[in-house]
Image (cartoon, rainbow, N blue to C red; front, side):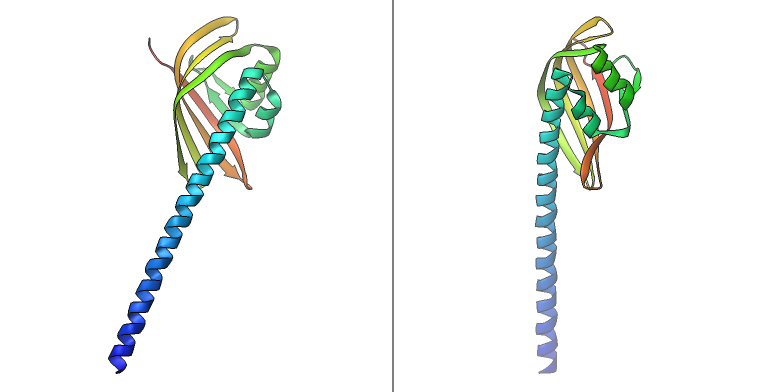
Length: 155
């Protein structure tokens, strides 16, 4: 009788652990989907801000230690990026994202995208395809963009 009771208790514990694992997996999957949706929304807001040269969105979502590495290899900081948009040194006419993938790693999101852009930087027009990567980090409950890197795609 004692062996039967012990066996039943053990079975119930294993079932409970299995259900707990399933619940954790479902919660984790839901959290990932939620984070992907948040990042997708932020990406859209940022794209609109870039097209309008709306630096208030950049002020809000760029981390203080944000860096950008541009297609020409130049590195800029948050302050430099914002000043470039304010002064008109950087001006985007169009951005069409054709493919984007958002991957979540805890409080970090990595976005890789292929986009067609039309822009003018330092008086030089560019129109073509670029691949870019953005890295977002959740800090104190808020997503912040920490890195942007773009590479021109050869025609």
